[in-house]
Image: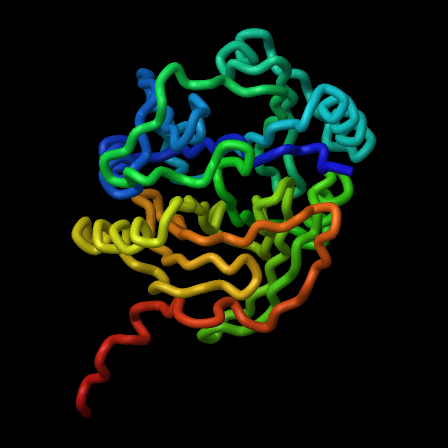
Amino acid sequence: MKPPVAQLAYLSFGVSKLDDWERFAVEVLGLQISERFDDGFDLRLDSHQRRFRIRQSSADDLQLIGWQAADSDSFNALQKRLEKSGAQPQLASESLRQERGVERLLLFHDPAGIACELALGHQSAAEDFESTQVPGGFVGEELGLGHLVVTSRDQAKSEAFYQETLGFGFSDRIACEIYGFDVNLAFFHTNKRHHSLAVGGRLEKNIHHFLLEAQNMDEVGRAYDRCIKARLPIMNTLGRHPNDQMFSFYAMTPSGFQFEFGWGGRIIEPATHRPDAFDRISDWGHHPPIVLAPRRKS
């Protein structure tokens, strides 16, 4: 039985520095502006017209998660499950549905209060995706935008909501201590991508990071170089995760939350996947650069 949610369709960020975000998104990440608005712009990374909504706001945070339903029956079933869960889903106005370019659109919030949308269908771009910075392109299409890690008020409640109400598959869990911080992350899949979502504990913002996955390994190195040249803070050096096997690094967006840029993510079979538990974030690497700084002589 396939998951009722097909993929992570789009994310919306409210940002205070639109010009910085445009340079960052296009020149560092290698995304393409698909449409401009008075208060921001949309970005794409594949054939979808919209993978990111960037809008002017003082929030500097994730403001919306867009999920795409697998089909009409799945949309109907999810609407009923959301109603039963007490999430109080609302069908979007006709104008908002048309703005998203989808057949149907449902609005709700997750237990942490993060606004979510469930869309049936998606709007395709009129032209092929092209990126001067990432000529090899990104892993997207039926696997979705990538993944994101979100906050929770009650982690068990959020995990249950995504698994039991939205029908996500449980991929695995990482629980460990890293550089003095306790980590407890639950990972969930909606398709063959190892995870489209991870849920952790309380954060200052709604989001810890989002991931973009390149089609080849060298694109990760080139993106790493671009971040250094742009003087973006590197949060974790190059490394590989044990669960999704992603080779990646982490750096800071202009809004104070992180992004992960990677390659080689694990593909699973949702119907037969067996969850595991890990006691480490990385098999190697992913060190905060501050630990690599030379010690001062006393």
